[in-house]
Every structure is written in structure tokens, then in C-alpha cells.
Length: 247
Image (cartoon, rainbow, N blue to C red):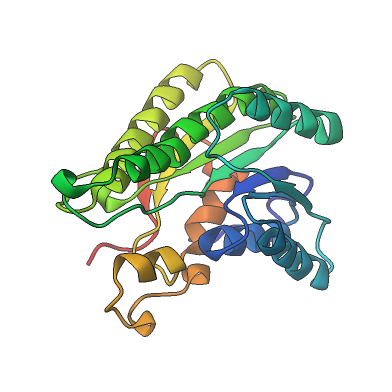
């Protein structure tokens, strides 16, 4: 999947979970394509590391936005949107990459507090974030793109994947509802990406016996991430797509 170089020039893209793994790689990919990237995540040090990587390549200057999606009050989400509006005026895209795995155990043995945390970060926090960012996406000069992160266990339930699996079913539903609401009423397209098995810390936690060399690195799945964020994907809307071919 080829996307034109500098396809994101002049665009402002927010990436959640930008301090590690796929989020960091996507942020670099978007910056290399010309975007101003807003780096959102819980850990300031990790975000600073991503910022430094972007600076080292003399790419458009990024912005660091420390923010925890595990918040039960709506005000911080509203304040975040206001901060972005004041400093950037609009958004051209959002990659909702942040998420947590939780436990790999049976529902019967699942810890209540862990369940609440996974659902808060993977579902409720993403809803609150998008609720307040949609007005900024509507202000995009041309088109805008929202990418949710799904999983194969969010399309078909799998034993012992617990809250993570359920949260990804919810992500698919949230994407579909949003896509239908925005269709014919805006220039915003909304889709899901299933990254597939990728060499990340979450993958290592989910499959502790798996050798890292058995799974591809994040940069190998970036063509779809870049394509969906670029104007070349106009017309792709309400889809759940795989970043890797099914085996």
C-alpha cells in the first residue's frame, strides 16, 4: 500500500499512547509524512523520548500532552480539548492507540478493579476523548480521519481474554456508531485497525513464552496507518481493517 510522501504536510494529528510501541512508531511515521504530531500518553518521560526522536530528524515540532485516560471525571477531557483548540485551532486526525491488556484469566477469576480499569481506559476514556475532540475535527480545513485500535478478540470472543476482548468489541461498536453519525454530516471518516501480532510490550505480556523474533516490528504495519490518516483514504469509512494479512 503506497502513500505519497509528505501526504500529511500541514496537518495536525493526535496520537494516544505515543510513548511506546505502535503509538511511538505511528507518531514518527506521521511526522515523517509532514504532520505536526500531538503526543498523548500517561508517562511524560516516554513522551519526551518520542519527542526527541522527532526532533532528531528535524521533523515538524511535536507537542507533548501528558494525560491519563483512566479518569472518571469528564472535565479533564473537556480541558484537554480546549488546550488543543487554543494552541492549534483544529485537528486533522486522531489515532486512538492507547490501551491496556488487563488479566489473561477466566471471567470467574477476573479481578473487579482490573476489569474496571481496562474498560475505563479502553472504552470510556476513548468515548470521552472523542466526544470533546469531534468539534476540533469538524474544524479541519479539508478532511479528517479517526482511527480506533481493535483486535481479533474484539471480533470473535476468545476464552481467557476477559475485559480486553470485551473492550475491543465495544471499540468496534463505538467506531460503527460514530461512523454512521458522521456519514453525510461531516468530512470526518472513522475506521478501526487491527494491528495483528506486533513486537510490543503488550504482546510480550499476553504471550510471555513467545520469542520476540516471531512477530514483526511496528514499522512493518505502518503503511495502513499512514494510508488511513492521509487524504488518499477518503471514501473508506466505517471499516475494520487488518494491518497484516491473515495467516
